[in-house]
Each structure stands twice: as C-alpha cells, then as structure tokens.
Amino acid sequence: MLILPSKNNKLSAVHIIQRFPLSSNRSLKAWSAADEHILKFVNEEISEKSSISIINDRFGYLSVSLNKYKPNIISDFKSQEDAIESNYKLNSIDTSILRFTHLIDDDNAKYDLVTLKIPKSLDLFHLFLISAHKNSHSESKVFCGFMTKHFTKQMLEIASHYFVNVEQSLAWKKSRVIILSKPKMQLEEIIPIKTISYLNHRDEKLLFKQYFGVFSANHIDYATQFLLANLNIDESAKNILDLACGNGVIAHEIRNQSETAEIHLHDDSYLAIESARMNLSKGDNHFHYNYHLGDFKDEFFDLVVCNPPFHFEHENTIDIALQFFKGVSRILKKDGVFIIVSNLHLNYKTHLSKIYNNVEVINMNKKFEIIKCQNR
Picture 1: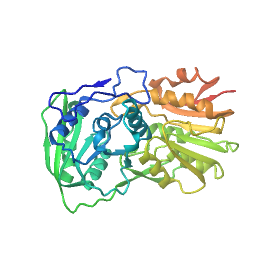
Picture 2 (picture 1 turned 180 degrees about the horizontal axis):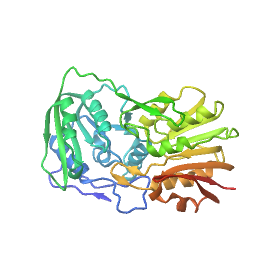
Picture 3 (picture 1 turned 120 degrees about the vertical axis):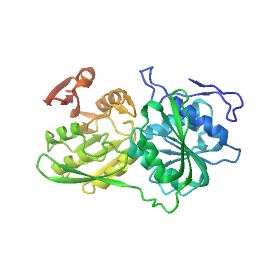
Picture 4 (picture 1 turned 45 degrees about the vertical axis):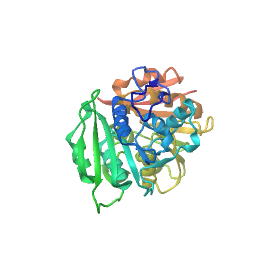
C-alpha cells in the first residue's frame, strides 16, 4: 500500500507499507489516519538536523517515512521490530541504520521530536510518556496520535503529569494529535512496576510483579484463572512451553507442580518477558522474546500450554492464535499434549481439529473452555 506525498511536504516520498506478519483479513491496515496526522505535525517542525525518537510505530509507517533521520525506535514487540525491518527492505532502505531500544532500557539521550501512537492501555501510555519525558529537552515537542473514537480525558490527565503544555489538535480524518512541550522538571524517572495479588484455587495468596502495560493489567485474567484451577502436570512432561506467557503466572503454576521440568517462556512482548523473569527465579527456566516458534526444534516439547491472545490493540483477530496452533504442531512430540484455554465464542476447537488428530474439550464453564490437543 502507498503513502502518497502531499504538496510542500519536506518528507515527500512514496513508500509501500505492509502489515507483518501478513494478515488474511484485508480490512486490517498497516497504519491509521492517526499515524498520518502525526506525520503532518512532524512535517511542520522537522529540520535537516532534527533528532527523532519514535514510540509505538507498530508496522513502520513513521519509521519508514522518517528513515533519513535515523530515528531511535522504541519497541515492545519482536514482531514490531521485524515488521519495521521488513518494510525497510521492501522500500530498499538500508537496514543497518535501524536502532531499536526498549522502554525499560537506560537511554538518557535527548531528542528534538518524539512521535507516539497512543495505545489502548493507558498504563502503557503512562510508560510511553515516562520515556518521552526522559528523552525530551526544554525545546522538544512530543506528538501523540489517536483516533477520535478512542479518546478519554485520562489521556490529557496523564500527559499533564509529565508536560507543562498539553494541547489538542482539531480533528482530521477522525483522528487527533496531542502536542506536548516543556517537560516538567524534577520528576522521578523510575520505571513503575505493578504488584498483582492472586488467590489461587488452593487458597494461597500469591503476588506477581509486572511492568505497566503487560496483560492483564489489574488482576490475573479470568480465563487464565480457570486454566490454573484445572491444570494438572503429568510427571512425565520434562520439556514444557508456556506460550504467550505474559507475567509468567502459568509457568509459575507449572513450576509449583514440577520442580525438575525444563520450562520455556515465550512472548512477543519484551515487557512481558522481563516481567516473567521477576516472577520465576527457581528451576530450569528459559525466556524467549519472539512472536514465532522458529527457534524451537521439531518434536521438542512434551507439553505446551497457552492462553492465546485475540486482542491486537483495538482490533480483535485470531490470526495470532492460528499461527500458534500450526507452529505448535511442529514442535510438539508425537505423544505430546497442547492445552489451550479460550473464550467460548472464539470456536477454537473447529480450527484445531483441522491441525490435530485428537481434539477434545476437557473442561468448560459459562465463559471459557479448556481444549486438549494431540497428534497420535
């Protein structure tokens, strides 16, 4: 798809931007009007010597458009990093100039312009603004884009905590931009960590730490709680994968039942992986920051457990789950077991039956079901 240049545009260029991984849903796009709106404001402010930091550019619209400025790109997803690299290659841009950092990295550099696509999670927006504030000098400007239908007053309240000037643009193509300047002085730059209290099915009170923006925000997800209450680890399972691990609560229960198992935790989110590290300190644990399963050998795992994501920011899509289902069939041993918990309305059993020989619902309540898959 094309980004068409406008008249008097300092950033004039024609680029092709694709979602990555590619989606079968043609209604899902690689950018929104909010991204275009941000770029309009950047175009008014940018100079040849401008230094730029880009936060939450999911598929690379802004990173590609601003590539000649060699921006610092702050990411939280491995799929995001690969999407941006893929779109650089698609547009014949030198990928050696790519520079990715993470929200919790110790980066004290200052940038003239910061672009920020406001996420669905306001906790994550809070974390984004800590980064934007830390990397701003007295003359910096921060452009925060969002679709008007997603606006809440909390966005302005959170932004006002970090910046003196908080201005909101007029609507354009059903999007708006919040323009921030004059970072407030003497603010603590400590990366916030939440502690979630969880009373499990054994009436044990457990505490889990996680960075802001990691699913789920204020409590252990109810589908996960249902899975944990019905999860029994066979002692024969030696190599186990917690797929889409989040803060590591499922792996924690697995470790509670099996002290000797080799447990692998896998997530596309860097913040999730780093949160899981804080919650699993005992045993043979391995952490994988990735969105695909290409790093794992064929027929390696005795057991794979997963609560597959079906929310992608403001989108609902099962594309990620379907990719997991196919990938797990390769890395699961012939007598291995794949256990999934899901919302009933997603109808995962139908999709799984096309991949696995033996698919059965082993437990269910009014909202969720636990599905067991094998390829015997």
